[in-house]
View 1 (cartoon, rainbow, N blue to C red):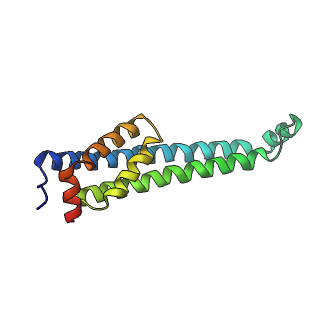
View 2 (view 1 turned 180 degrees about the vertical axis):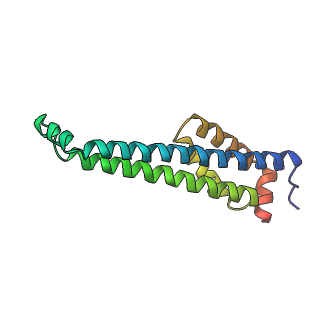
View 3 (view 1 turned 135 degrees about the vertical axis):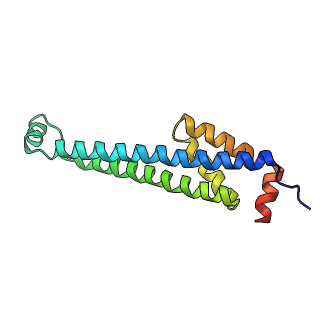
Length: 138
């Protein structure tokens, strides 16, 4: 018989649910910033006067599409982080798909310092024997 899920483990899992939702919100705020920045830069670069100045200064026309590709990649990454953190929070609450939550934690490590802290806490909690056993039961 697997060991029971201790009250402390339940509390830590609830805290991780909250933290993953907060991380999703922070990623969403980053996404909004990127979208606003893209809108601002698009407005500036699509201005005919600016385009004429860029041509006169020798800036290649390829510059604008490359920036668009960069913004597209950043938007895709931020949107992905929002979605996987929301899903991870739901899976943590239901005590399902432990590996998904660990992969999400690993991806959060790549972003920022709060992501690293969340990932370390997630790994510590999800690697406990009692938590592993609770996940295996579900």
